[in-house]
Image 1 (cartoon, helix red, strand yellow):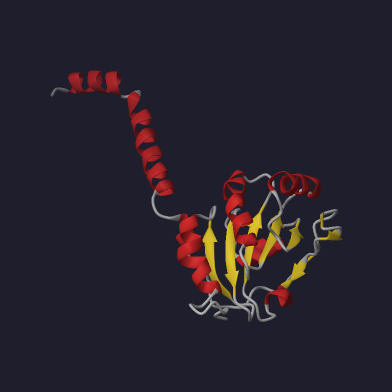
Image 2: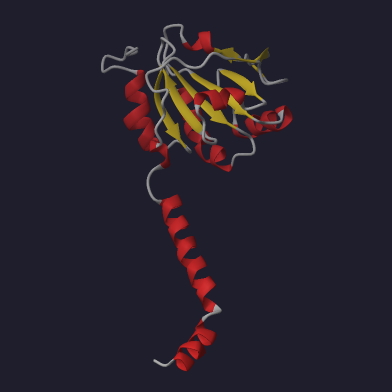
Length: 197
């Protein structure tokens, strides 16, 4: 190939080169984002005590004529294992997992608490009014500080906390029936039906 034909070739295909490079990079990023199971993200807090926190109740939320209380770290260390779900009214995936949370809350012996993450109280109340409230307690984490201390990447996330207040399991993303059956329920009950923790 002569220098003249190389130059003509570059003039013909040169403008497409940045587009080809961009397409290749976009394909790599797409593959990296969609490969693997996000629920398997590691957590340095597994086996450790939950961070110290105290969350106020969600303003104006009541059930059965009583205000739904907030909660604090000592409430997670009173001898009973607890599922802690981090949610928000603006989270689409939270709507996807919500029926599963409602079913869990109806199961005997299941204690389910919620952390309302960076949410407007009125929006959170509407969300729970529309879809139902599965939580025995809800802490309003308006600043997101408690979720950060838990290591939350994004909502929804769900934790199983032992009766001693230690994090036993973390699920990133919307819960699935498989995760509840294979990972969460075995942590909550031993074969004889008594809590393991």
